[in-house]
Length: 366
Ligand code: MRU
Image 1 (spheres, helix red, strand yellow):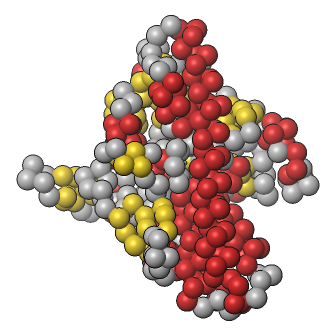
Image 2: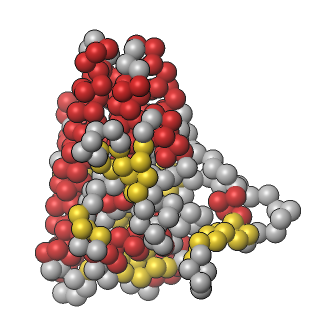
């Protein structure tokens, strides 16, 4: 996608082949800066500290992390230890484990001499595949938006939570891809952007993305969505996912579940957009998903730009109050209208998923 007229992906390899570059998402929207990853430790730190975030981008960064690891030492031992090291960076998004498993499966059969080049090529193809999948998701999702626009004959109001745009992927995004496609086609859309406390991915990243692309949007407090739905001011919701189970349960940024409940009560269609790399084909239900607990400081403090242009962090909770910072929640499949995926839109259920991905039937055996 474009920033100031220049095309960007969130992750790329420099022409000198020595470095992998990522956009530093901890500085946005205040500063567009690029961080270079030279080692597997750099990649792990970027994932852990959320320089990169969003399920597909975490996977892409881990793939390049494995390639950087091979560049330093392509032995069997280092392949296994790097996979374990990267896997522990964040627990919830399944794309991380998926990308690492994919890299190991491709590299293990090769001789150590051939691994580095093969690893960079495989990481690049994981990134290209993510872009193609997200673009396809955009096409299927835009059909839904177009239908609503045709029926209502006015601007379609779409609510989204967290950031599931191109910054969360390699390009296009999941939940935002249909919005970009619809907007590019001239379908009038307006997006309600949940601020998404505590890290403000909505206010910082989704608003930045939509603004850079010229998509009309309004940032709202996380708790306003239910009221807007009751007033008929939300036509549909689209969110992303960090892990979706074989029964259709969806794990996403904390707060998603409450939006799904409000949507259900108000008859607002609630879609989840995700590539197949976000499906955990081995996990039967959302009850088993490990939910990341992050530093309470993310909740007790908030960062922003001062009037004189300095990025500062201030405390917003009394010093003596404990805080619990769980990063994700699970929305049961029964509250999901449909899963928008690269092969089409399916019911959030085992049958729905296997209809789109019949080749997974064996893996998803009960
Ligand atoms: O903690 P984050 O910012 O990595 O969480 C991101 C989300 O929850 C996104 O909604 C999800 O990864 C879908 S990304 C296309």
